[in-house]
Structure formats: structure tokens, C-alpha cells
Length: 356
Image (cartoon, rainbow, N blue to C red; front, top):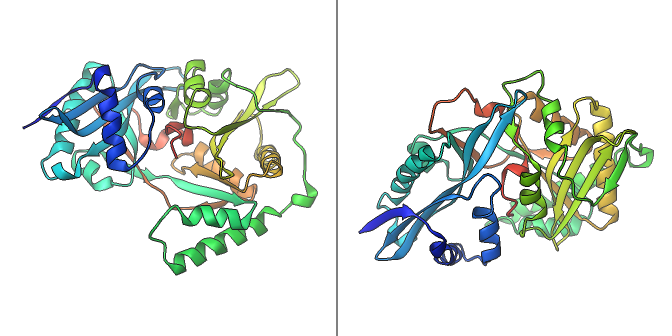
């Protein structure tokens, strides 16, 4: 008989072993503890399904605090580690775990569960909305290295898909030359590779002051330190902070690069006073710096559900990124009725755990 309960610290190793066995991964306990136990807004609510002491299903939510320009706070939970043992599928374990999780979330004051998944139908069946999907963008420096990496993302790629990926890499490389020889330098002082945990939330807030319906993750110092600088999943961090003459932070672009030379943008934040042209200049300067360091490919996530996120897409297009309207679903379910509309959520890759 399958039983459902909250996990304790004594279960952590068994949970991680279960995850690694099912996914054929090698997630370490350091990674597990960082993601689920050391969270800045409280440790995760982690539910396990067991059969005679053996873990056969898991799911949890990571507490994430949301806010808006009026400093109104909403405690939410980001869904992670949704997993059922293949030998136990068809026994309603997925639904039962979530039923248990809803009650625990309500007890902890969590009002909304949200997250990302390519398996949209199971979530829709238990009452989740899937209001939109994310988009992607990329810019290529080294065609061959980028191609070799991108074709590995889907082991089922056939010859035609591989040819399309190669064509995409060539097109992106050619586009990256646009404006390269008439390169403009930013009017701000750009400092590279330092830890920036202060003023970040103010950058985001500046874009929302006239739109109180927009909301975003409360990026406190503790959140920034945890999500970016303490993240054990990262190989090398690249931070580009732009300051004005008064040393006020005006823009921040953070990236993680892997040993394979692929860099992922974690988040791009600009003060609202910086116009689109200057944003493009700052972004191009960052791209140039990364390419000179040997980065072969830069990738990003995008969303077009609100004006701020849509404007960001235009900045990246003007900085010669190719935007691909292909992504995974964003899921959303209210545990308690709120006034929040998921389309007004300012999102970036920082809303993930940074696990590629």
C-alpha cells in the first residue's frame, strides 16, 4: 500500500538516490541540500510516496516570495522534483501527492504553486493552468562547437533537424557581425566578475512603478546569494554590472558558462531610465567580452506575456540574438484566491534553479 508523508532530513539521501536512479543522473547531496534545504524563504515542503519503506514518488515546492512596486508580498511555491517510479504509474500517485501537497502548502501560507514542465496534460488534469510557454534565444560565436552542442539536446534528431540546426548556427554567426565594426561603447562604467547582491530588486522595481499589477520574485540579498553565488550547479559565473557616475547600479547581466563553452543568461536587469538603444549597447558589450573569452554560444529564456518581458525580447533581437518561439509550459495553480495574473509575472531564467 502506498503511503504519503512529509519528508524529513533522514529521507534526503534516499530521495536523492531515487532521483538519480530514475533520471540516470548524478545529483550530489550538496546540490540537493542547496536546492531544497538551504532556500532563503524557508526549506522546501517535500512530499514522498512510499511503499513498504521504499520511495516510489516525490514532489516538493520551494518557497519563493513575490512582490510588486507597492511592496506587497505573496508567498508562493515553485514545483520541483515531480517524479513517479515507472513501476508504479497508473496508481494515481501523482494526483495523491499533489492533494497532500496542497494541504501542506495551505498550512504554510503558500498561496500559489507554479513551475515549468513539458508534461502539461497531467498538470492540467489536476487543475493547473498553463497560460503560456517560454521562448528561447541564442547568438553563436563558434559555429562548429555550437552545432555539436545543440544537436545533443535531442537524441532523436534526424538528418533534417541536424541540417536545420547547422543552418541556424550559420545564420546566427552571420547576424552577429551586424554592427560589429561600428561598435559603440556604453556610457556607463561596466564592472565584470563581482558578486552583486544589493540594489538588484530596485532595478526590477523601477520598471514596475507605473504598473502595480506586475509582480516579480523578491530578489533580496539572501535570494541573490543563494540563487546565484552559492549555486553548486554553476561552472563559471560572469557578472556585468553597469554603474552611473554616482556608483548607482543601473544594469546587471549575469551568466553561467559551462566547461563546454556555452553560456546561459541568468537574468538581464536594467533601470527603467535606460532607453532601448543604450540597453542594446550594454548587451553587445557583454557579448563581445564573452566571445573574446572563448564562449562559443550564448543562450537565453524569454517571455512575451507583459510589456517588460516583451521589451526585453526586442533588446535581444537588436543585439543580434535569434529568438525561437519554442519552449516548455509554465504552470500555475492558486491554493488561495489572489489578485495575481500569471501573465503579469516578470520572468527570466532566475525563476528556475539554474540546473541545465
